[in-house]
Image (cartoon, rainbow over all chains, first blue to last red):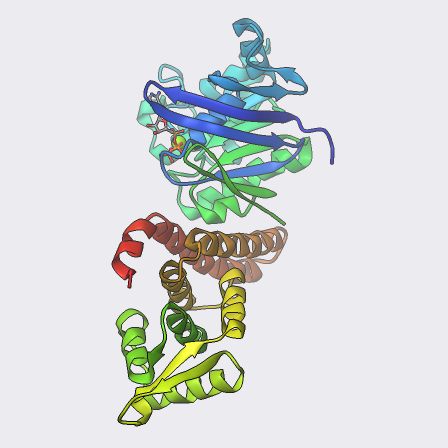
Amino acid sequence: MTEPLLTARDLHLSFGESSALSGASIDVAPGEVLALLGPSGSGKSTLLHCLAGILVPDRGEVRYRGSRLDSLSDDLRSELRRGDFGFVFQFGSLVPELTAVENVALPLRLSGHKRRTAEARALEWLERLEVADVARKRAGEMSGGQGQRVAVARALVAGPRVVFADEPTGALDSLNGELVMDLLIGAAREQGASIVLVTHEPRIAAYADREVVIRDGALAATVTA
Amino acid sequence: MSVPHTLLGLLEVRARHGYDLKRAYDAHFGQDRPLKPGQVYATLGRLERDGFVVVRGTGREGGPDRTTYAVTAEGVTDLDRWFAEPEGPAAYLQPVLFAKVVLALQSGRDAVQVLDAQRAEHLVTMRDLTARKSGADLDRVLGLDFALFHLEADLRWLEHTAARLERLAAEVAS
Ligand SMILES: Nc1ncnc2c1ncn2[C@@H]1O[C@H](COP(=O)(O)OP(=O)(O)OP(=O)(O)O)[C@@H](O)[C@H]1O
Ligand SMILES: [Mg+2]
């Protein structure tokens, strides 16, 4: 097997009294599409946030391309997140003050692209996700499913190495869910991106190369082909 | 629905005579389709022929109803295999899956493991069907989608049941 791109070892994390992760370990290979399944409250989002360096675990370590995420400075970690990672959050992915096209252009703008080229590329992605018609609307003026597709466009626009997607199809009907998955899988197959996907929909999980079940903050079962 | 394995599973929980067995089956698994008495005895006859059950004794009346059957070691081995092996993803799996879960709980086996094995089997099939969709013609895709939605329904039921195992265990404790 190739070197994993991302590894987590024995992660523990509590929010006050309540333990969200209790010994979760996982590897993500380059180009791998990994689905995290499990009951509500089992720790899927928390694990995703730890893998992405958004949350720092109380115990255990996360490594990205061999170096520890939790010991990087906040600045370096933000830079890494901006440059290498794409995100679709379960809630509130978009910047409410910005329009759809500005939201999608944001990762490109932050890495130094001119406004005009960034927005042109953003618009292409909105078209692929069939939400170009809401390009000039702000987050609060779109439907839940439109906002979710805009968030997927933003996660993919800068060609990330890893996409972290937390229920990216949760607000979508089955056809749009399929569209989103085809684009995420396309990014994995064409650009070699790894996808870490949280979902409670088995049809969505079936796009993955591997499914992992989280129960009570740790891995309960793995399904590989 | 696998009537032979379900009856065998009930006999593993405890030895019973034919009528008692029918009643236990009907109570948990046969609300819609109670067993016919003839079916019970025909199945018991086959299980006895295959060495999975033995006659433990006959009651004073000596009628067929009073013959008590018990599971053999071979019967338990056969049940172990049944519990461990997930079902192929056929239509209308619910009765047999439900029987496995209830009997696993009653016989002290790990019902979570039964559900996990089945989930894995379903997911592997779903992954295979999903892969076949890419590049296929729409009529083919819609056929695959039909199968995928049905497998998803099974999986949702598995999750739903997994989340309620504790309560189910309390209810079916015999
Ligand atoms: N910011 C927080 N403050 C306090 N507790 C939290 C916080 N975030 C998560 N938790 C708790 O940690 C546990 C795991 O939460 P998490 O969001 O990871 O679950 P999940 O598997 O993503 O669930 P869902 O499927 O509902 O999104 C839960 O018990 C939750 O209440
Ligand atoms: Mg979550």
